[in-house]
Length: 224
Image (cartoon, rainbow, N blue to C red; front, side):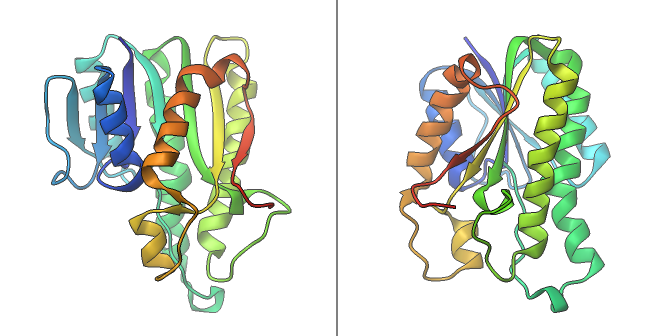
């Protein structure tokens, strides 16, 4: 029986992950701002969490520690995307994206450090656009740069954790058909569904730590 924590579970990949882990009867805690799409059940708990707020993250970690004796898997799936020309962006735009995509991830991992089980697996969900040398898209300066920062954070935390049994990896996803993608690029058709990507992430969370640690792994059928 695994204890799993997932952020950003109200829709898309996060929502599908909850269904998949739930079907395996794993214990799942969902950290999400929107409580309307997933309900508490026998093995699924939902806690309202704003990853841009340190206080909200601390409250979520207190909830996790009350429910779980330890955490086996953490999937940092939540993300914020702004599609706007750079000259139209503001300090607040960049700040809001980095708070969710970088600062909130770092704070959640830091506060959970004492809660991770031996051989716990942390998975950060990034973007192929955050990898140096990959194709970039106009309008995503805040989003893609934040994912680049998340990739480096993963590599740095590997250095911090390598004397322990904690494994940390990043999956840098290509286009997936989600509501967030549709909002950013209306009409664009991605090659993979949210459920298909969730199935891959679940399998990687259970077995990827045997093969990878501290890696940024592109998950895309197209070349960077």
